[in-house]
Image 1: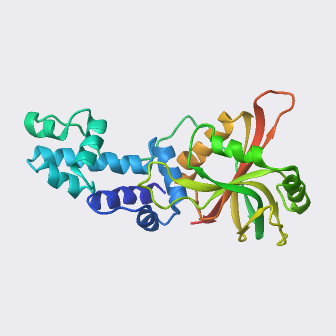
Image 2: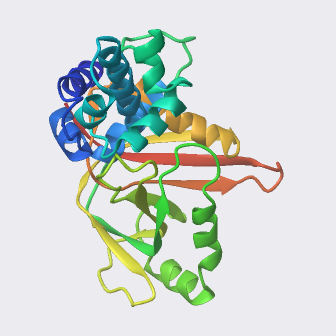
Length: 287
């Protein structure tokens, strides 16, 4: 995975002045756009779009130092107006493009390079499961992509579920895990949006095909799953496990993620406030 990520970095460098799209980048990387963004974020600490914007502006800074006109540089790196470029450059650097030309000041943002770093020797529990085809059924909504913190749109979705919908989900549920799950899929392909969206579903797993209009149904083909149990303070432990999956496990595993929905479930401990057991299910295939 690290080799592929470094190839992605090289690809971005070669296309900084082109119309970069997440679809093209993820196709080059051989991984879905959603998972590419997750891996990139947890390994680098920044979003893929933020990285590309920073690299474009850093290269624009160098071009201005070399005497290129602000107008030419703005259009070279995909900005539709000088005002838009000037605002972005000022926000990124703290000074105006004209200051670079007049005063020779500059700001750098080097190209990334991913390397293996051994951290602390903390073991990570996981298991591999083969699962036949099933359907995710439940209530879904387009929500903003958010890798950290509480997503309030998901909270609102959970609060919107009616008793009638709960009863139907319970009646349909017939395959493990026998829990209410949270699934994510269909992420926006346009990474140039500062905040893309994905579909989030709260529901159950079933092999039944007959579902009423009260619920949404998402078919999931038979595949292999990497399952990561975790237990501790909620939601910190769940979020930390997700981060470690993408920053530690995937780069060194003999598996790669595939473009099916991933899901998780959480069982709160009745005797310990804000403490829970969770499992994260990631669809994978052997390399």
